[in-house]
Image (cartoon, rainbow, N blue to C red):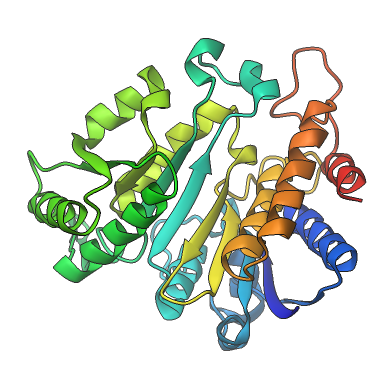
Length: 353
């Protein structure tokens, strides 16, 4: 297979972890006799510094032509002035919008060898396997915004069509899993959530009768994710709730450095990135966990390139590397020597080869 992959390393630890994911993709290509053209471009803070915009035209054009996009992380203190008119996050939001990527998939499954890395009791974590489906292009992040020195507003908006399409994604995923969907909202307070609940119930009942579903308020979902995580199969929710809940869910696996994500639209092209941020406090030190970026590359192989065998091979290599004791600082046991970013990726490559 021939494929063009846009690589957007971004800011902070983004270039460090993305470099390791690229090495893994190159190894997969060599092992399975594919031809991957990996082409880098600017996004986020580095793009602001270089071209005064977080999403340069050349980056957008490359991503439109690419079969898939691999992203590191964006943002950092250098660009964090709340009054700034140009911010790194605008680049990512704009890219999602321009590519029509409305469904963010975030798998959460604790590794058996890393149950001690989570602050939760191990008995709560065994057999946890959750797919969080987050709506990505609507809601309060994209609504009209106003601000004066003493007053500000952020408008939260959703249409019936936006809700229908993300619920269908959740329903299709659930059908191939344990056939359970939890739809998360705040219908006791928000009109957008009341519309969400009405549409979700109709779509799941009429189009996915084999899938069991329930509604859950977001505050209850936040509690039950930690209290009884095994009960969740597919969890679907709107943009901001999904952003918050998946960061919380990272504690089930022990670190944000372990969770990948895929952002998809109607076609096969998607954007793949670890859920963690740019971690400016450790950037440049070579200690960031590369596993989430590498696992994001595996999702790229699966969802955009249709290479299930290759995706499984890469995921299995990460799992075996962890089994063999490959731990970076964020998941190392007290007193245990932590591996560098490069050494952790080397452990994966050794298993992959």
